[in-house]
Length: 418
Ligand code: NIG
Ligand code: FE
Image (cartoon, rainbow, N blue to C red; front, side):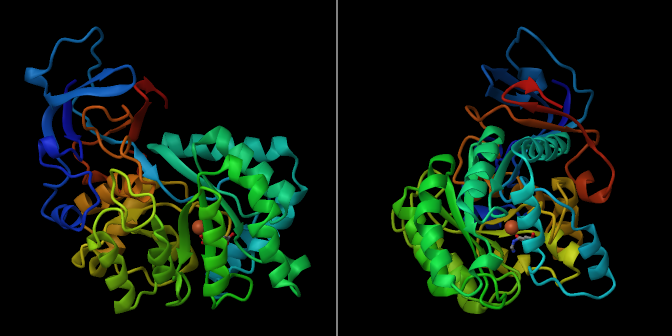
């Protein structure tokens, strides 16, 4: 109780948690789509939101917590990270800042270190990063494999990731490892065969680095084969696409009914049309559908453009077309090593011309849509009581005070967590 501004993303308060084109557009209108309640209270029961509204009309509760006029938002949903790995690539970053381009070639360095690391080291580092994320207000995180690239290390990575989150993604097709450099078909057979069999039990999603411009990543046909094998094994699809060039990733993601295509830095008009079309094709036309819709979300990762000194994606063009946009960190040792959703929100506002309201929606409800989750990313009745408390009077402060640790406490499933 005594919440200065409560952001709910809940239709009951004029917000939107559905990832339809219309909802995605509505958020632009001055924060209305956030479902803001001033002077609010939240009632939590058994880890779920039981009531939200003006504090003056709140039902009686057993325990009352006074938040002193601070702002409460739904916990961030970081729908894209690579947080189980070993090794260090700070030298690669330093070289980039003096002019080296980012090509993805450094992934091999992390693969070597991750294969060599013991399970305890990998687990400890993954736990530390997820704790770091929680302290910055992230209550749901997706974690990918992809730094193992052999059966044992991919499976180990996903087992560890599964201890940290239910949102685990098999990314054996991150790059072709050195020992298969002359046998790409052989690596594809491994990724879609024995490695998939070992990893699928620990994964919810399959992903591929679809980037014909990067020599060790995958082209359209290879990527399609990987995604379809994962879908046949019961996994949902997501795609790394259009990061370094306007490749086939976006169109392939829509074709296979992927929940999200991530990066979207280089898009053609046809890519925008395909994404928008995936939301108007009618229910059940793609993928697994579900309450968040069956279209493909565009997930933007501006911390990568920051850390690779690249042009930012054109968020306004996607939003104008009614494409639901998510924001995520992509936390990884190479292209961007930030675990901070507040930093990503600030970048999205300053560098991609999203309004503070649009950026916050994309970092919460947008991330939930990218994971096809209806229980997180909003604070409607029945949602998980995942609350991020800001030491600030409104959500605008996330971008207005960049770099300032505004997250003062975090509640996960109704319990104070950080
Ligand atoms: O999402 N693009 C491919 N993979 C990661 C980067 C991996 C790395 O450089 O270690 C990404 O940017
Ligand atoms: Fe990534």
